[in-house]
Length: 474
Ligand code: ARG
Image 1 (cartoon, rainbow, N blue to C red):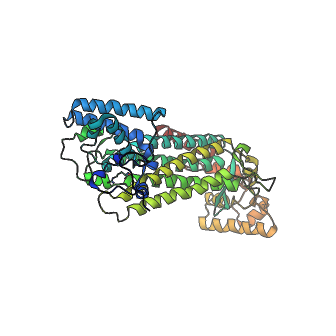
Image 2 (image 1 turned 135 degrees about the vertical axis):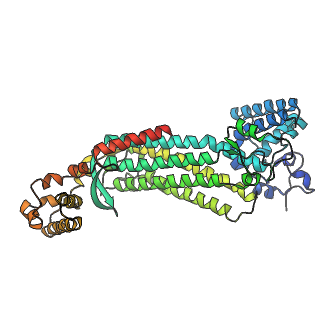
């Protein structure tokens, strides 16, 4: 049996339905609930009220509604905002969406004056303006969270500018680097993320309001004034584009997915470093979890969960791309799905950044272990080759000579080139002198690579300074 909504109050109050006039039949309750979005867009309440206050003021100024009505709408909207803030008014989750809910309250309280607020607008331009206003509020907070996490990592990079550790390619020991170099690499990625969010914000800084459903309005709206009052750079150029476009959601979902992909990679390093085999990092007990069966366990769950949550943000980006693919112009109800996906991406990214920062700030690095791991695996082989290049040997010959030395070591059961005698070095190349031993120490290998971008301590500090500056400007 189908249940239809009652015209006079009760759950899903049909008198609140903005489009009920067209229909003789009342909407079926579960169908109405299916298409409602208030559970998701309720978080746009304050943005929706801000928008309506600016819109009503403009309608009054333009003589589209009486000045007294504009004033009454403004003070009632201000009151509603306060009541929602204090909790004396709660959002009715049986309403269709946040726009209907607020308009219904205005009408209940102000009668026909409330019925004037929607002149010259559609929920299509309203919702996308609310959404942009929300993003203009929230994305800067996310950028601040990025700068904060980046800053905390830079503190550790600075502290460990000279702590040598193995650098890896293919997860095989490659060349000695510094921990500062590794952590600064992460920060460089976070700083680009910060820029990505900023550039998306720049492009979304256009005000759709005044676009109506798709074709603007015949009423003498002042779009410039509305855009300015709402803090947008300018009104959106084309009304149809303004209601159909969700590029800003794609760009931000993409920025979130990229940031989370970065965090997932950092966390993978952390998980590896926390293993008994590596033991490069000691996670704080307060940022670890145990096992219900294995009494000894101390697990890097936070790093794992952040790594796992990257999947959500990738999924949300796919959701949005799929949502938009082949969607006919202009507005379609499909677009209502945009907010849930992007809200989840923004929430997830903000939460994970905070967790990552907390976990990393409380962690300690086992610098002795890292230093010891620079011996074994012949990380100094490239430096041996460069030693020969500095003495005039063509690089390809130098590479071959160092490779033969590595083979000599392996055959002799040695773990490092410095275990060879000078005679053994010389048997491979007369260019080797006694200073080869000093040149191949991990600290010397790292110190030699002080080019811009390199892992040498003073170069790490230079990079840290530049990134700090960029995060400060963010
Ligand atoms: N709740 C809707 C959304 O989020 C508002 C716009 C509804 N417009 C419409 N023509 N049904 O997209």
